[in-house]
Amino acid sequence: MKVNTQSVNFNADKKLIDFIQKRMDKLDMFYDKIIQSDVYLKVENTSGKENKIFEARVNVPGDSFVVKKQCKTFEEGTDMAVSSLERQLKKRKEKLRAYM
Image (cartoon, rainbow, N blue to C red; front, side, top):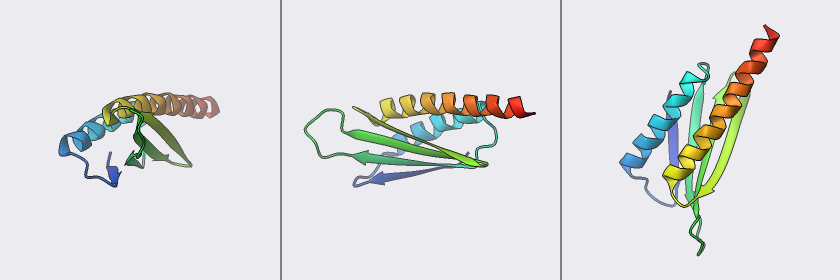
């Protein structure tokens, strides 16, 4: 799956982009009809430690899922967002199975 990654107001490291790609690729195991996914990485200018925002949008036929997580690191945000997307995709797949 192609993941479009955009970092706002900073340049993302190649290792971070590869990490995000690898984690998002695991979503294909749970739902095989994913069209595309967009990831936005943002850093808030606050004094708090949890200033990294990870936002992901996954498009599937007829729907799209959006997850936004705010954490200390982008890696932590990626893990939390992917597990949340995993649950949403499983739920959608179960709904589709019920109609068949």
